[in-house]
Image (cartoon, rainbow, N blue to C red; front, side, top):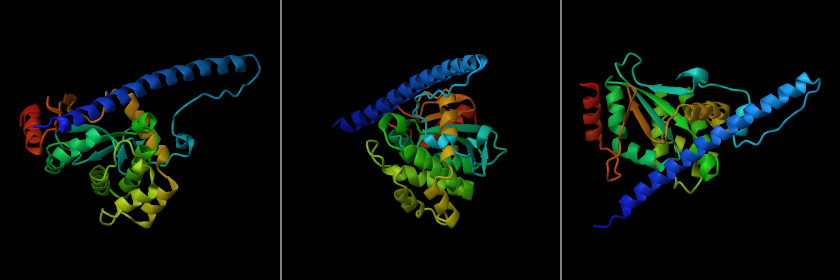
Length: 263
């Protein structure tokens, strides 16, 4: 039997992990640069002069625009999206990037089971979303999709979850920036009944939630997550891929959760 599919999946995971490692390293360099510039600026002010100092950055330009946070968020700056019952006994944290092909594999294999356990009240899901692949692969698809997800969230948590699933089901090849096309995003939004309202279309077209998406991405970078997808149940990171590189099935996911929670 050919091993090419397994090798492709493993290669995709390795590329994504390496991309995230590069981004974490770049983030450290950027933080050091900001500290150094702050010191220089402070000395300039102390000397009776004010100097405008520009720093190189690959951050989304929208990050400096006025911040509009969607409703139905939680956490600082509303960077966390919660799906499920607030009083659920357990918390599942999911770290993802909409351009991540390995995330798509996990969602396609176990996503329905993940949702079913949340719907049944066994845990609530906290989504921590990223856009680091834009920096490492080029383009703006992660940020555009994330901002559009914010517009969907503003319509309702259920609308966000449905749109989240549609994005993964229709994810372009990682080498393409398909999600960077707003028209493609709006086309996909039609697959979610009742989502493409006038307000949603306006928010996506005008990039209303791009500053929020930048905040969400920054929170992901500061979270310590080592890659995507990272899945954490009650503080314990779960291994959702086998040694063969295949994601867990829905049945395996349910068994893993029961084992982890003692249910």
